[in-house]
Image 1 (tube, rainbow, N blue to C red):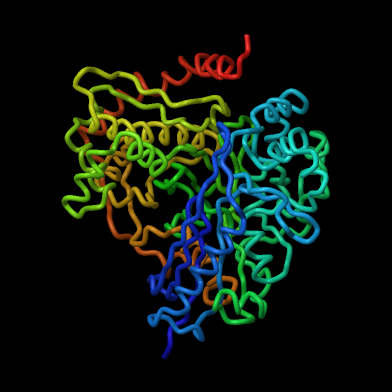
Image 2: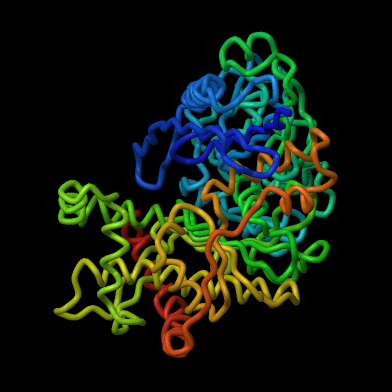
Length: 517
């Protein structure tokens, strides 16, 4: 008998991955097609939406032509994406400018305006997001800085919305993507928070009216899309959620007490909450799983692969040369050299906010700080500082989320590219002093989208059941007691106090860079 197949698509910051999964979660065929970023001004990050479609169609053609899969066995295709990245389009659905990415921080003035005009707490209570770099504030930036584009805008379209439209001809969005626009009514996620949108002077008509839940068929592949992609005409196209909620689903995180950490471009920390989370303090933000369950989240925009790529491009000549000579992956060389350093890195620490900070600080002017250096600090110490700094900050964020949801983290599930490093995984287990599991596939985000498709197409009855059938654990780590004890002191006595002590200097630097008095 032939095996049922679901496709999972992850249109991420750097590439679109198309992966065919069996009904047991085995990868049968996969592709990845990259596209460029445009950073023409400080703090700006943009992409050409046509590149998303080109990468997607190329990936689909590569997978459908793979002899390991039979197109006739495809049950559906699930989509996930880089969340609140968006492009304004006209009434013909043509982009009016490049897309503005999620990690673009051009809207700090607009976020501050919202704090002053409406108040961060009120906005957080209504949307689950205090003012920040979300789509809503970039829409206000468009109004203030590109009024001609703003005036012509018919809708603000997220990456998943764009791909669904190109595939099906249906203009829809979904609750698990709308959350991070900062404009959704978080307690009633099938509608927009129009009072907040109007209060900021942003048009309410530029938001897509039809908001679908996750794991729902949005439409089917049209004849035109079938010709471009190689997908069968009529194939169900299924909503997922943003990449991180899909990522923890694809890692098997479905129960309160499990913390999913993504070691990818952003270092994201998420866990499932029991009902609508508390909104007394904006120490985190609130997401939705494809299952419809609420998730609390914090993330470090400049996460594992982002900082390691920054290190490689600026300081990694030796590692690049060594990798070429030895035939190893350059990141294997980079990560492994940190093993030369002792636990705690002799106190050399990194605050990893190279692209602003979200919860619990909500400071777009936050920047990275490397401290505790001495004359014997070199490349290995810098790499170790990146690892430990991300682990320390992830723990701090998780503690705020635990307090706001009355949920204790019992176990970590680590996913994303950094999980290939045993040292990375062990550092996080030791810093948290918790056991840590790593799923078999690193492509958990695409798997989460495929799990959503499996549910919508009737293969499984729920996202939890689908995850139980399709996710397998590959590696397990336990904290090393002596390491955990040392990290506990560095964390409690130094790290958790340091950001608060230097935050005012970061804001002063931002003022000076803008030429303020």
